[in-house]
Amino acid sequence: MPPRRGAHRGGGRGGRRDGRVQPEEQPAVPAVDPNAPVTEADLAAMEQRYQDMLQAALAPFLAAQQNQAAPVQAQTVTPPALEEAQPVPVQLSAEAKHLRDFRKYNPKTFDGSMDNPTKAQMWLTSIETIFRYMKCPEDQKVQCAVFFLEDPGTAWWETAERMLGGDVNKITWEQFKENFYAKFFSTNVKHAKLQEFLNLEQGDMTVEQYNAEFDMLSRFAPDVVRDEAARTEKFVRGLRLDLQGIVRALRPATHADALRIALDLSLHERADSSKAAGRESALGQKRKVETQPDVIPQRTLRSGGVFQRHRRELAAAGRTLRELPACTTCGRVHGGRCLAGSGVCFRCRQPGHTADACPRKPFETTPHQPSASQ
Image 1 (cartoon, rainbow, N blue to C red):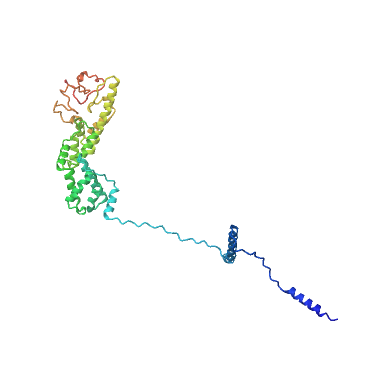
Image 2 (image 1 turned 45 degrees about the vertical axis):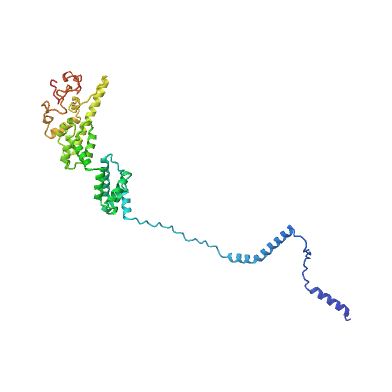
């Protein structure tokens, strides 16, 4: 039996309706009243929607960048090390180089004082010594020297430089010295120092002090001490008489030899005086004991002390103390100062008694000074 037309149509229509894709239903958006006021909640909702839209838009780009960077390992790029800037060497002038070398010797300054002319002369001598060691060129000496002038010395140089033309580069070292000596070490001062050296004697000075004064003043008398023999003779001639006789007898060949002998005798004299002073102090005596080199205890002579050694040197030289020159006062041969007629005991060198009544007679004898009537 054929199907009913009405039923077929109805079934066909129903199948077609089931196969269609129905549109997705959108949620109903509530109507917004344009006249309603905007609240804080509305603003927060709008901000949140904006952030969501921005993240959704950027998400594909961020994902693509991550996919590209994944297979590639990060490589550490070390920037090239910055080279330290090397200091550019300063190009010094010739004057600056010589002054730098000159200062390495620590030269002294000169303040221009005129109280001590010797100080000025010694300063200039020390400056020339440095020039000699550093081989300073002649045209640089003046500039180096004036750098170490102070106070009145600087004022003097400003005037001297102006008088010499005003250009330090054209002033010679000889011109500088001539003007320096004229100001600080005049001819009159030189003559005074020369005369001081000619009159120099030991006197109350020790041998060390006398030698230091001798060395300092001898620089002002080059003609007097022109050689070693003349220098030695002048030194011996200035010694105390009691030392001079023995030093002459030993005929020193040099100034150093004469100084050595004089120092030996002087040290022995001091030691003997100290012993005598200690002995007198123990006896309760307060008088000062001054023992001359020719008054020596016999026990010291027997012990082979300094004086005994010099006697052996005399013997080696073929001489004895008896060959000393005769005293012009008493006519006898003895060392030291003559005490004849002075009222001083020949034995202990103390006044108030004679040698035959000397309280020190049991302790020592006097081999070189005669003990005749006084």
